[in-house]
Length: 233
Ligand code: GLN
Image 1 (cartoon, rainbow, N blue to C red):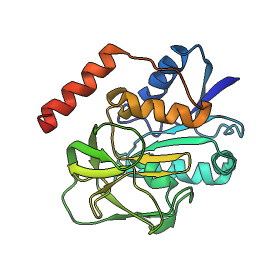
Image 2 (image 1 turned 30 degrees about the vertical axis):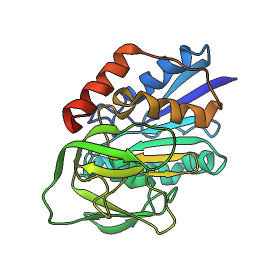
Image 3 (image 1 turned 180 degrees about the horizontal axis):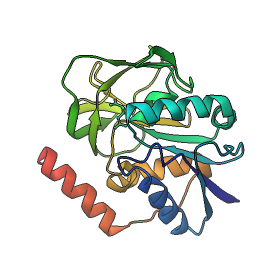
Image 4 (image 1 turned 180 degrees about the vertical axis):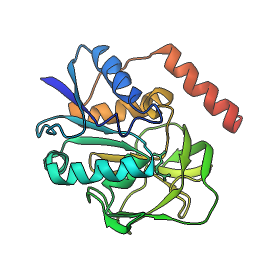
């Protein structure tokens, strides 16, 4: 199998460095001798229907709505996700894969890959380190950097990625992110998969199945340093 990773619109959704999530997945896949290709999709290019992992990053309010409209018109991401493709979406990306979100035009529909509504409130912007206790999977405490105005309420049946130990995350009930089937959303930048190698492997495994262990000592040290600095553990 050739694992194909689709990086979507990083001209529009690349403000926060989340494009690095692709490099982390490639690095960790190659370490297991998995044949992997990165397909870069620019705005207005057709989104492949048969990718294995689709990545969306953070972005400003205007570009994020432009990205949403293009993805909706294209239909490829929804098609792939309905077929079980893995999706990892950060911040603006997380907001646009939800069911609805506030915009300057008022409430608009998202792509609906997950049941999540994003609202913009008068609360101060959430900026800073985010620490998350995962609620599923065999994952350690996760960390990332958040920077967002929108807050995201998950539907009643939507599992969060974790619960917030410090920071804001989704901003409702101390939830952070979403993990529904093979679709992940998170407010963690960093890039998130560079700071959380076990989460990177969880995302990879959704696409390729069980993998042999791989320890990247630099990545482990970075994750441990962030955890220690932020939690004391
Ligand atoms: N524009 C969105 C917000 O402020 C997303 C920001 C981001 O992607 N970091 O909520």
